[in-house]
Amino acid sequence: MRASRFDLSGRYALVTGGAVGLGRAMAEALAELGSAIAVMDLDGAAAEQAAEDISARLDVRAIGLRGDVTRPEDAEAVVRQVLDWSGGQAGLPDQQRGHRQACACGGHVVRGLVRRHER
Ligand SMILES: NC(=O)c1ccc[n+]([C@@H]2O[C@H](COP(=O)([O-])OP(=O)(O)OC[C@H]3O[C@@H](n4cnc5c(N)ncnc54)[C@H](O)[C@@H]3O)[C@@H](O)[C@H]2O)c1
Image (tube, rainbow, N blue to C red):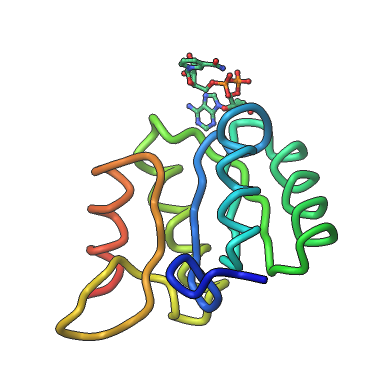
């Protein structure tokens, strides 16, 4: 059973470098708490496979996307795809507007991009 304090149902997480290793472990941990998962990785096939595995094992929505987080155009394209995929539900925490949040591993670049797409 999920502890309510850590229940991420209805949330979206974008995990960069999420196909294997530490990123994959983070993606799985977030999925175990109920979050939908977008896996971004340099290796698009591995990202898709990771998303498929996570979705099948943990019964959450998941999508795998190819992208190089160091390339602004890739990061921007992936953020746009995640926002589309979430049907506009993904976004950063904003208590005033009260919408649901995305956890954006990858730091300020991705956060800035999400904010730009929210305007
Ligand atoms: N594994 C450890 O114990 C450990 C300890 C300390 C620090 N780190 C650091 O943490 C990071 C992740 O470690 P890991 O062991 O999971 O690495 P890993 O090499 O096993 O996995 C990295 C994943 O990130 C992807 N990736 C690499 N560059 C990318 C980019 N520019 N854009 C998108 N995806 C990219 C790779 O394709 C791969 O799937 C590394 O920077 C590593 O140096 C790891």
